[in-house]
Length: 257
Length: 356
Ligand SMILES: Nc1ncnc2c1ncn2[C@@H]1O[C@H](COP(=O)(O)OP(=O)(O)OP(=O)(O)O)[C@@H](O)[C@H]1O
Ligand SMILES: [Mg+2]
Image (cartoon, rainbow over all chains, first blue to last red; front, side):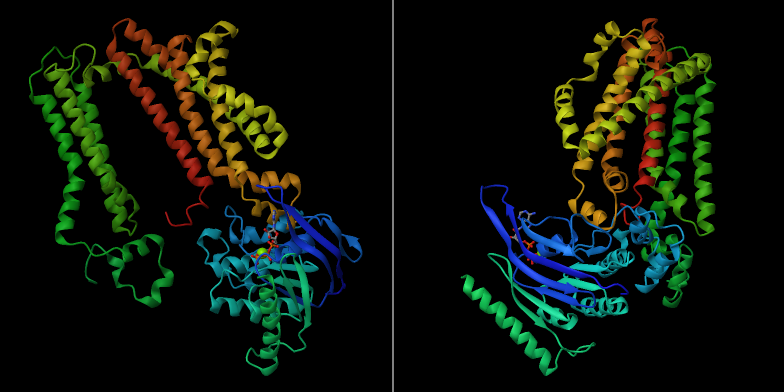
């Protein structure tokens, strides 16, 4: 990435009103964190601790109840192709072919003319040249997720937000995709923020792991992973990181009961 | 297995799979037919011809109950039908030899229906012309109907044009307005606030209720008929597109938003394509309600068109002409429905994941 960006969450709290009752869910409370280009930040924590909420705040899909989310000092107000999101479900548009899905955002911004080779390049990158005229219904889960990934990447977002992008995949495809995402990221070194349920995945991919806890949602640990890529899942230091994080999560779990 | 001439592609080996076409793939995946199944297939294909000849013989050999006139019209038409089937079958067989199985399979699939049609004609002729079991002259035999058609075809064409004009104008107006209100209301809560009560109020009222009202209120009968037809289609399309757009998954909007789509693009490039199945369903429904409204309007007030022609001829006890018009109506509505079906299949080709 030629331009460095700094993403800041300052005293961010987010609460949701429940539909059925008068109660309020405190999804996030007083979150403070700063990240910048070149980092690959993994976000782990128990279900319902507000991981997706952080991502959606950064994306601009929702606004914080209190506090401020800013990129380079400018407050985030609404979604922008500069902050690309890959959702857990691929959410490909079923009425568009693979090629048109990938070209969607360029088309929406009126930038498609003259950039067809970019679309072509993305299709090649994920190895789906033979499927570019197919509809999403004809793709396997892994293929769909790859399309969804490059559909976002084609904008060259400064910040890449990944909400459990590999959650729905089988173990084999998953490991393969982890390397693929890392490859893409290492080319431009944009700021990547990825939510995951899998502690191994968080350590394998992240330069930094944020551990969260629920009720109220908050960050309880911020761990730097000081290892070079590619990482060895069975190395002593890897196991140490894993034990450390699992301990924190486990401890957090007990405290709640 | 490889020398089975019915399935020439069976000799493909795995390395060649890459060059297969769709119909070859289908052939490859179907099991080899037994001798029994093959005979059954041949019998099925021959059945329409046999039944056609039965119908022909029934007509020519049995004595008539009442007097017949111009007796050969029916014979010609029957022969033409049989010939058409034979040509269809021949095309299927020739194409199959060339490796294209689609037509042949269609012929095979439809053969029992064609056979049933010929049998129906035979039975119908027996019950009318031959025995008079169905009360004459209220249910005229097929030959009379065909003759009536030949005698009065200028008038029938004229009426058809009038009917189509009315249908087309009413339907187009109704569907266009329905799309506008439906899409607006599906997207904007404020618009729905005002339109919802109108729909709730108008919805349960059957179209025919409006006929007497519009006949009195509308300046011209034609205008009144257009209004009735448009109202029915407007209602169907509005409701369908409103629900269609309301059901668009929120995730799609969020994805589009983060990909840089504007509000306008979210309507036209996300909401509408996503709601397309529902919208087209509404258009089909609108067509059938339009057809009903059209016939009611023509039978009760408008002084032209096929519906009017039917009532007018039955007033003169010309039941053969009445039936001729009825057949034209059936024919037109079948074609119109078929066209809509085609459009729908083309627009929604993304739905069935490629395999048909
Ligand atoms: N739109 C919403 N309306 C109401 N409550 C919400 C909404 N979105 C999230 N919440 C609540 O906020 C809390 C955090 O949700 P969030 O989706 O961020 O969790 P998560 O960490 O992503 O969980 P998971 O790992 O299961 O995806 C949950 O208790 C959830 O019920
Ligand atoms: Mg989540």
